Length: 243
Image 1 (cartoon, rainbow, N blue to C red):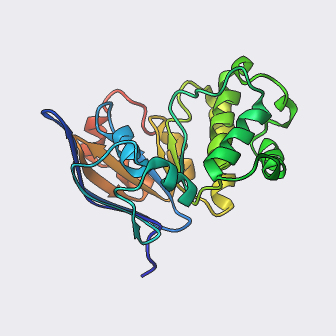
Image 2: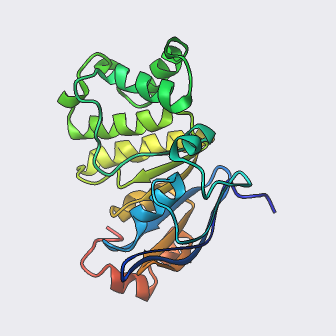
């Protein structure tokens, strides 16, 4: 069996009496796209913090490419190849779109500024932002802010990309455009974990789906099968999971 690119082993985390991770085991294969769903407060974003190093687990290990990075600093993990987007994009609003990418590529990737210009130009094209390269990031509409958030993560040249509700707030055709972009990123060899409430977007883009509830993984498997399980439907009562 091929070694997974990312592995969480018996990860536990609590904040006071609130358990957000309870002995979680999770793997991500090289080139795989994994979807994560769960109600608010299930521990999804905390899990991303544990993977990227901004949150320390109470117990358990995080392995990346076979190396134990549980105690590694976030910047080291970033330069090793772990990148993430955030649910609410927060670009450097006074900088241009291109300057935002240069900052991410140079500082996040540990490279000289002039050496990252060609890669940043490629990302502008890949993420549909070429015509907005010289616009201030703070003036972008929501879809383009999300595209920029994704482009900034890609600028660090990740092997694993963590996406946190990138489809939230988008209308249907904007969601479709974002799904197409995520598929393109995956086709270029980047492994992906995507947290999302817009479940039909996940089903269109991922190979495997896991459900997080109460700090535990309660379901895992093929997306169409997982979403039809009665326990999952009950948790998502009122959410159009199969719209």
